[in-house]
Length: 382
Image 1 (tube, rainbow, N blue to C red):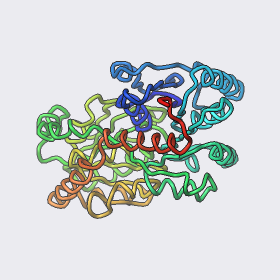
Image 2: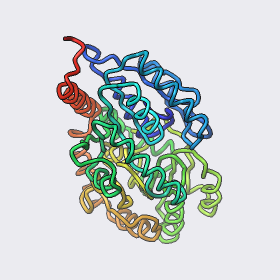
Image 3: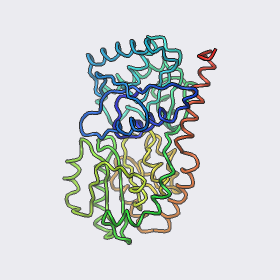
Image 4: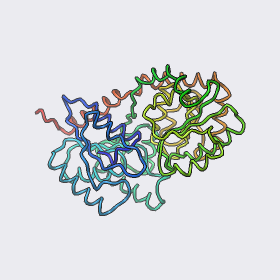
């Protein structure tokens, strides 16, 4: 269960966990609300992947007491009727409502993946404290909490959410196979973007929301452009800040490319020279796996689980969050050293491709399900 199937790492993780499930062992339903606003949807890809969507019409991301109460009651009835052995929730809102409903319905195994946290950068401090209290409450009704990185475990434990033995670290995998072909197509992709062979393409991708920090990327781009004439910029994605970011980047003219949502992420990543991830808060940063698989060095904020993915000085450079000057300095260091960024990209690819595949992710999640089934004596074959 997840709140909505918009474009994002949490949604891809949830989709592929259902799509690649071992059908000899697991019968999987995917439950979600509807995508709203400017966010792109992956629902067509989900259905094309053979995964049916079970809609909860009142499930929304924002706090909505009446709708939330209706969703809670509907979920409880659904869980009782289907007699699930396992309910696995993803993201905060679905995690709260889904876990409460599962506990009330007597579901024997309850698993939750937060995909980051809501401890900073999302809500007013008073509302944030309420969410933290709710996470603590729900953790007491959860058998295992899957974190994408060890840093995520530390952040949750620091807020008093759950006990250490409840946590398991399972990364969010990607399909690494298309990236080899994308690297081979790099010259053609850059040409299609209007990027010359000697240009340095500095890119970013994601939801254009405050938590992703893209205003710092644009601010850094303006500083970089003043001193590095070869620098070109690209931003892929859409969201609430699209218009404000366009206005902020206006002085860069056609040196800054607005790409919207891209269907060819491997190609886009392989076309870059440096990926920037300026997030204020980030569970892991799946886009960093994609850049690494494409052999591209990254400059990223030292927040959340990012330091578990980016080896500072080896696969990229880590900088202070909310610091456009630090981003610009790090990017310029790589822009002016082709050998260094090439070595970092190769090191990143050697790390990502063998260890961060979708198949490995799903196998580890299903091994956790089996562990819990054995622990609780749950086995429909008996």
